[in-house]
Amino acid sequence: MRKVYKMRDEDAVSPVIATILMVAITVVLAAVLYVMVIGFGSGGSSTPAGAWNDVSAVDSTTAKLVFGQFTVDVQPMDLKFFVTPAGGAAVPMTFTAAPASDNTTMSAGLVLDAFYFDYNFAGNLVNSGDYITIYDLDPSTTYTIEVFHIDTESTVSMTGDSGTWTQP
Image 1: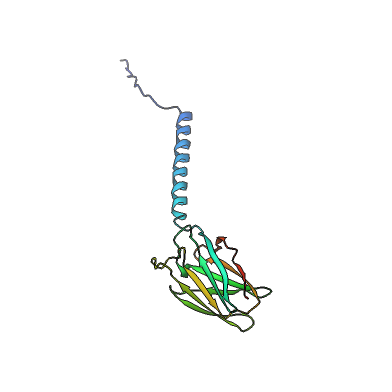
Image 2 (image 1 turned 60 degrees about the vertical axis):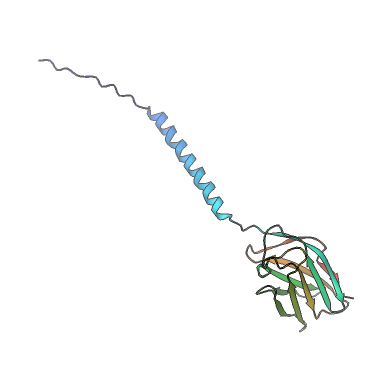
């Protein structure tokens, strides 16, 4: 008796093509995952940029610093201000609520009083026209102010007025 073998028609992908397909699928999935992770990580944490409309002395002991527009919505309590007298140490100031005031002691024992004024009451956001008034400054002293964004832990780039003024 003779055995009859039936031929099966099996179409298969060659091992080389299968390997190339698996590598391509893996690369595409890794790229999609990378884009998703990068997208989640950058949600609104960019450092804002802002502007000064005016930075000047009002009288011998008071200065007024008027904000211009910021590139993103920023609340006053998201910012930290460093007021530095010429040849002195920087005095950090933060606001806990807007409008708010903050007392800060300078290295020479001088107390600076600062008041933030929300010019157009725009939901506690820093907008063009809002300003900070700083009191109890030393006459005949040049001051510089630097703005620091607390959330991104970086210095805010401020355009417009220089951020430096001299008390009369």
